[in-house]
Length: 71
Image (cartoon, rainbow, N blue to C red):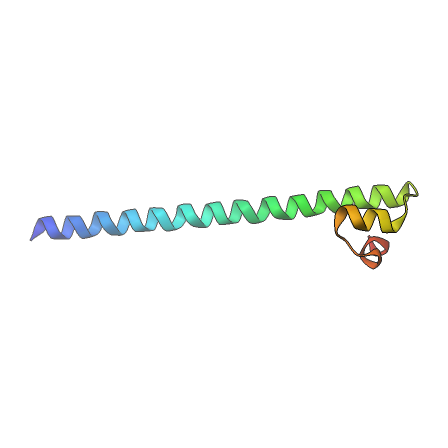
């Protein structure tokens, strides 16, 4: 009987470990996406401030002209 309790305990610990690992990866991915978006906005803002045509910035970044104006 003790073996089954230990086996269940180990299985639960492993499942918790896998869940935590997945959550950490997901959190890291979200942080990377947020950072990439901020860098993309900064790049578009820089192009806008340097006088590049808004339509060209929109085409290259995927932002709408209105979004670029609001940056």
